[in-house]
Amino acid sequence: MYYGIYEYGIEKISLGEWEKNNAGIAVFDSEEWGKYLTLQEEFSFAGKKEEIFFCKLEGRSSYFFGTFHIPVKKKVKKHTTFAVYILTGKLIFIDDGELVEEILLKVAQKITQENCSLEYFLHAFLMELIEDDILYLASLEREIAEMEEAVLEGKIEQFNYKMLGIKKEISRFYCYYSQMIDVGEALYEYMKDGCRVFSERVKRLQQEAQTLREYAMQVQDVYQAEISIHQNDIMKLLTIVTTIVLPLTLVTGWYGMNFEYMPEIAWKYSYPVVAGISILIAGISLWFFKKKKFF
Image (tube, rainbow, N blue to C red; front, side):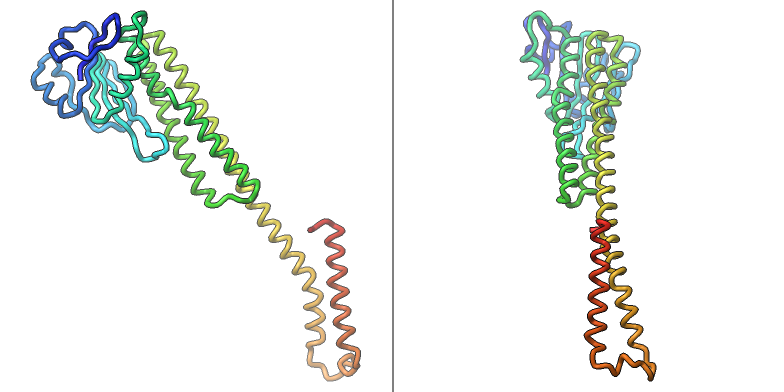
């Protein structure tokens, strides 16, 4: 797809018009780009799109070459990738998906006669890449807050599994913003004002992601503290039970000895007396623990 940038906006044009136009945008897929290179000697410096794993922008003598590895929200292992060449008056995108076309159409609707230029389009394109990210980070914050409330209410299940997924997602976007900051700095000489606004926006997003990472760690600490409290309650209960049962065990062991001369054994009231003593011991122990607010 080929587009020309005019005073009145962006318009779809033919390949011949795009090559002659002073300001234009082209969107190729990998196969189309390979065919185009074989026909155009002046673009022989630009190789085919390779596998993309991160965002970067490199300045050459007469052009910039960049790759973009955009994380897909809510899908930890999925990314959208494309490459871009920035030449004098030309933008060439190599995209096997639909992301570039979608953003291009959005930007085209926002462009007016007063701000239509290649630099403005590039700035608007970059801003569209991070347009809804603050809302997504806010949704992650809500998820963490809901998990924190569930932890305090004792209703959380599979906490570590869920928190690990959120931390991975935050880390993925934090790395993405770090790379996009480098992209903005690399473009500074090309469009100073636009890059400054873009870089500041990305830095704020990175700071928000860092805040979420710290918040997630705090909630995880709260979860570990709740587990420790629960374990302490169990140990307290076991201690109380052991303390009550221990003297009763002593009485049982005492009268379980096989001595021949034990006068209490022949006494007809020995059983109710020992039972009463046992009940008294248990009652006194419970009263003591209750008074000390052990339960």
